[in-house]
Image (cartoon, rainbow, N blue to C red; front, side, top):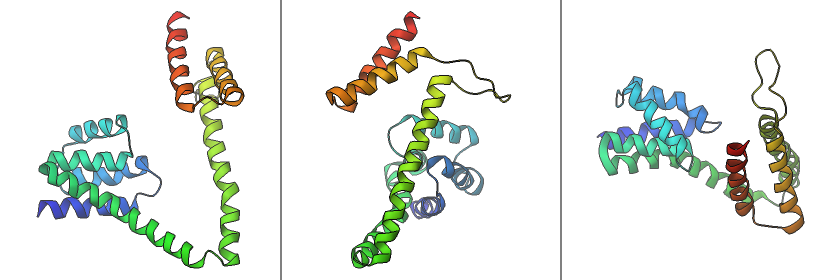
Length: 187
């Protein structure tokens, strides 16, 4: 019975946590701490910290960790399946609709309108990260801590290597990380 409860709880989380893992945290807390009392608030905080540190989506990681804490390996499988299933059904339905109606002019118009919006959202996230990297966190009064010239130099070098020599982004990230460690220790 616990496996079904884990599945159903995380199915609801997977279905209603629109906006990513951080948006799912209150839903997960409500289900596992308040509603079912599977975890204490301290255990929940620990699981959230681990879920954020490990690769992969936060909601799926937290489902797996909660399931294993509550009911072992089978509990982890049940909770993870519950968290993933709604997304799979929605994506499969959208894929079917697209496949069935892709030739319609209205569908092509919708997709053509979505492309620039997606590019704008990615660019906005990139610009926000660049601003944070170059100028640091802004204080509530609006003042910053000045320009981080090391971050600007690493960015410029990485961009140059990517554009001029077409090096794999993995190598550029690794090199930028190593360069950052060395420069920030030395400076």
